Length: 437
Ligand code: UDX
Image 1 (cartoon, rainbow, N blue to C red):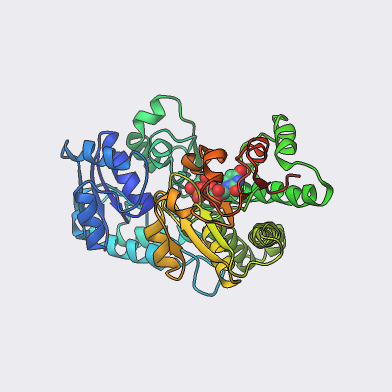
Image 2: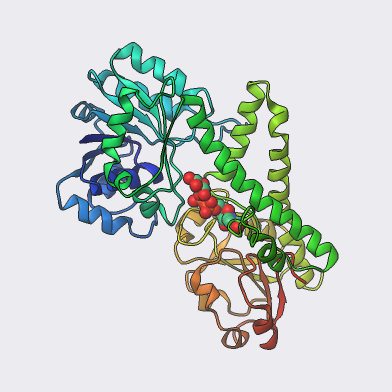
């Protein structure tokens, strides 16, 4: 099939490459000339394992190209909208200006029978509005809402082998003409048994925000339990292991620590609350305000624990923060709890050095006032305390005996509860976890 992908950021670049891998002829369209140039040279504009290899592989087949020229969309009959929907400045709602601009740019190039597929995360009600614009322009064209559930760091495999497909079509019928078109797009993963659900537009939009809200709630639940564990001397990691053995609960997304961040969960729960308010259903989501508050409290808690670890004052203390990305295998620092904690410590008088294998350039753009050191070995020299805030494998593999000789004071705060406390204590370290005795 001939496919256009509009917006080549995280979602779109991966989607375009994966659609070409599935055998389609794909053009990726973006307004950013630099992004287009990088992608055309098989360079990913962000760190995502496997993406550059995939770009190289599919570009050599001639099935994938990138351009800034929207008129090239005229050669395709399926058009994916993959632009961002960031949080509005100073408000909780989602900024839909990129989605609107993408669709308005595309409309003049639609042909009879074309299918426009929205993948961006949008407030419920957006798809119906956009569907009207599509039909006004081209009465035989269709709009499908097809939410994307990919995780950063696993984006390629999540796109090629997703857990499920959701197609939101006007009326929600399996017989809708666009269903067969999307089935052809995803023929390969569907043939291996990936489930596919057809819904109406609002349900498809809500599936995405509901899923992210559930995940955020799960993380905040276990972080609330961590607060209770701290108050009572219990161990939240053992608690999570034990409750997670109940199939109905499950162990995934029950890792207590410094809380969630990234370009999705924080902004999606806020946009969801804002949209519920507009719909007169705000009471239904007031619990998400608590989910957000528990999450933000984790950051303050780390600052307090670091102060305790440093003997009561942060002034002049040399703190090394291991990890700046919002999670490992990513260079994304959007709403990264690690970076936010590093900045708060610096503001409170600590001398902070941040290290990370991939995210330092992005981190330095966001917080230029922090000190960055790419080498872990150099970053930990003479530190008064280490804070493990992003659980990259190389930090998990650090040897407490080796490290003890480099730091000024062997103190470590394990913000992700991923280190073995006995091992670190045996090597002479003062070890603190999050919600662990
Ligand atoms: C998320 C959703 O998982 C994905 O389905 C959606 O498409 C986009 O948003 P992502 O933002 O890539 O994906 O990250 P995810 O793996 O969900 O982690 C989000 C945050 O939660 C990270 O900061 C992570 O460190 C944190 N987290 C995750 C925890 O603190 N504890 C956990 O148990 C799991």
